[in-house]
Length: 299
Image (cartoon, rainbow, N blue to C red; front, top):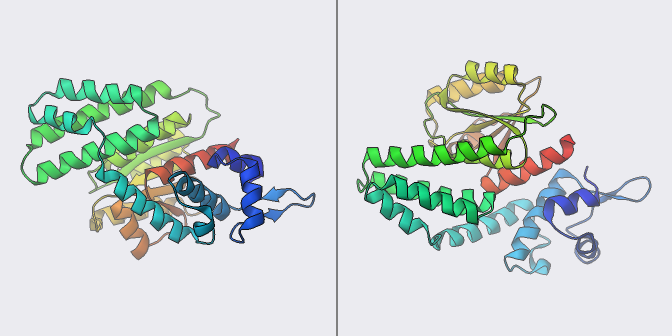
């Protein structure tokens, strides 16, 4: 359970706003402790986080307060899809430089955006759209495999360098391990998640893509990871990928660490083969918010 102070820290909503919403709208009713203090559940935290974002983006609280989390997430996703249609002004310049094989210029532009942006904005609004656009151009045969690989290596270099610089050596901070199972080559999602975890002072261990399940489990045990972050993009996942993911989930059924799993393939897997010790991460904002919550609870 979360106190009202914790909720204000996690959502950015002032305590006065929380109390006003509770008085006016039946959809928000925290429990009370023995001494009368408000106590918010995990589900109420998620709902308030969604309400905070949606009201900041122009939605009226009176019209959305009664919606459940699923309906609020649908509203959020529609807003994000609309936002994606208006690309960052640097995106065309980055892609143009890549088309001309000017990877030095790509790196310069990406670093300029890094300096000018908050980490979440940088990951969500610049890196993800750029990586997606590069992938689309490769599928359309407008970019070569060499260009796609050069750009991916450039992003990896920038992100991992920043994540390493942000990390603190303290063993008291919780640890996250990032990997994809065998047969899943896409590592962009776990790479950006690693950056956002490092920003929040997690100890981060980036293993990369296409690892056997037993190796992920063994690394997690030796590195004492609190959370294993798994990326699945292929939809549906390859049978070998599912098999190796099951090795990881089976090894963590009765003990830590927790498993967070994200990506389009993760949503497919979660619908068809859900595991009680795996938590589905719906998008990068969800990951960032959940990491904040975990860090607060850990302290």
